[in-house]
Length: 177
Image (cartoon, rainbow, N blue to C red):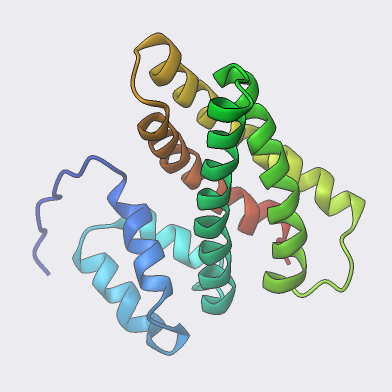
């Protein structure tokens, strides 16, 4: 097997590979692993192995919740920042916390099948979300307030950066089986 040179992307390619392959289904796990090895993507192989080729439905559901929550959070941020006139640091914190709680309730029931939310899972979810929130908040406010980037663009960049933390911490810690 020849080594292929790694291509350079502005985002971590391994995360993109893992997310895209999660949609292909569990039945092709051996072929997927071979594709990753051929692509010289060892960290993606390790990520897939560590969660047993990821329960495809759970990952897809989690991604759908995340995408929907991102749109709702942007709408709430716009309301708080442009209409209510809260300072951007306060508006981002309030919008993020509201959506953290909503995402937990929906994911706990729909993605992970728990009949009722539990305080211990909510506490772990908040712990996992804290890391993602710190990344998100610093990027949005650093780019928006300090560098003058429009807050919507800063929001999208901050959300993309926080995604990596959330995906791993949710599946490997909060709802680890």
